[in-house]
Image (tube, rainbow, N blue to C red; front, side, top):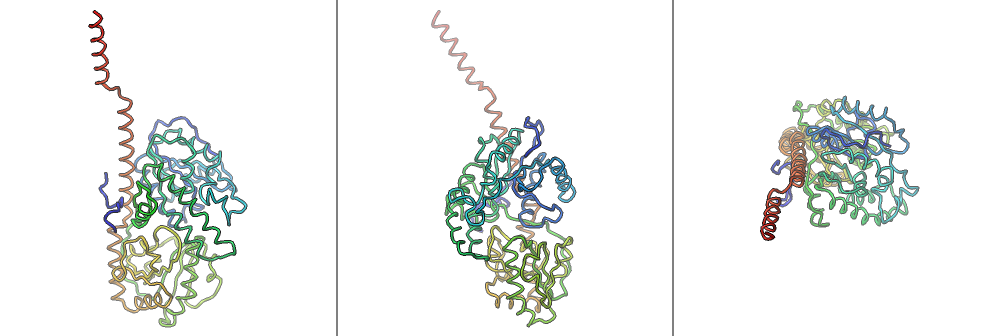
Length: 460
């Protein structure tokens, strides 16, 4: 990690149905356009990161959340209360939920997503209804505001600047993720026109970053990019993190594993690449090997619909520890997307050797040959997996080093504590500044009184 880039964890820990009346209890407002469809099974990395920030906020104050949802969702008090119960049951999170519709998607959403000036982000959260919903929640008097990702954060530009600390978890650097997505399948004739929207995405990122008190991204690599390339200030790294589990026994099976949510295109592309281009090479060299692919929506991949020897799609896995206990090597042939891959951190935390593309491990501190194996073509990835499957000493060397690094850098408790400390410090500083501004200046009163006395004496 570059020493000039500050990572928060490694730095010193220093349609809405709610009333707009100020809340006398301290609370933090969380704003997002990503409401989990199923709280229990929301294992995608974006929701794991969301939960990290929610937990940090919940340790400080009561938590209120405004979620922008699709226009097809029937926004009711009953639905909001249902989500509150599910957050409490599955995430152990006490939270008050408010819901507001997004604007309908533009008819040319796939190609232009509105226009080149606005770009593909933010336009669905910036209508009158969305702005009014956010203004109403700000009027309730939060102690701080946390904006989750670019779409939801854009709404803050349409309301008067809040007089409380505002934090923006950009998570992915969206203009980079958008650029990479254009280069990935599927393709169509007019798809290159999407590149014309990248300046609008960068402009939106710059405006929000310049307006908020602190912006978070998930790696020092992204911090450096935003600071050096686009001169965005007050940007810090909050790494993705996982709970460090009990270490399972050394694996005895010859099983390669991949984990992902397959409605996310980079995961679906990676699964097909693994099954179609890498797995046949592994299977030919190790006939007893098996490939287990875990995660929801696997039917969105091509390979799910084919019967391939040794490949099992196991769907959503409620007991992820048992899944990793039965896996020897984790393969992560990711080629696109943004942020950092929580699946790599998770596998390392379970003490499993990981083979990844260089891009798949980008932004993480794992080192090729020491605690991960990085390869970028099917033959090399297959050979690395074969070596680790058949050489238990090499596999355990990589796995133990990966586990140690996960404990040291990506422990969720440590990251939550650092986020909490940052938000808490900003709230305290803001309240102190308010108190100073409200308190009469005693020296000023003394000088005014002295001046009045002097003037009276002169008149006598």
